Length: 334
Image (cartoon, rainbow, N blue to C red):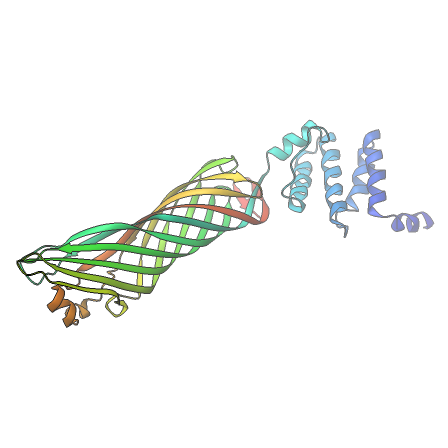
């Protein structure tokens, strides 16, 4: 009884020193028993050292299943641990290399400039005379944040919130006139995607993604200009005309993307391109003929317009949390 009381008073740091000495002497069962008593220690380093010593002892005892459990426990405590060839035995290094550690969550900031190209689809055009409209699609801007939840080494769910601007021009030429319309739209985009990562443990990793998106219109305005090409020089102009009441507040559709990651510091840099295919017209059909000034002065009414776009973005994702990915006989377990 006195010896048990004395043993209970020994700190885990001291127990682990004793267990290491037993391991060095080849007294593996005694080392395992002593190290096991520290796997629930309050001190994180003591817990980690206990599992490391257990892993070494199990490897030396050829108890490979128990060794793997202890190695996974090591990485659960310190997922960022990288084996050291000077301090870690070859068998431990080899075992740790077979265990996949994936980020649980990642938070990213993606920024791009001049790389959000509007790709309009106009299934039906409306005119007030004998002319046709020509659309010129322009680059916009975008900036946003992303949150990723990793389901498995190669699979993750991605959610983003992105502020994006879109620009396009409309030109047409009624008799003796040239008309110019420039429209600017600002949206908050909410894309969701399932992402597949190729070779997820490599430093350079390619990925593909697909999913739905929704966009809410924050602001929309038009510049309108009419210039006479006849004998009399006339010019009419309106700038920054608010047209939100002619635009649907919500847009939605599907997005697909391709990209590449590069592991960098405690996160990853990324480059990706996405195509957003709209399933809803941006114009309100019921307001097409409701604006007399633009109809009679500029001979303009809205077409049916779907706002598709192609975006290119650079970003950096910071890993917020990690977990060891466990795989047992074809069944994935956390």
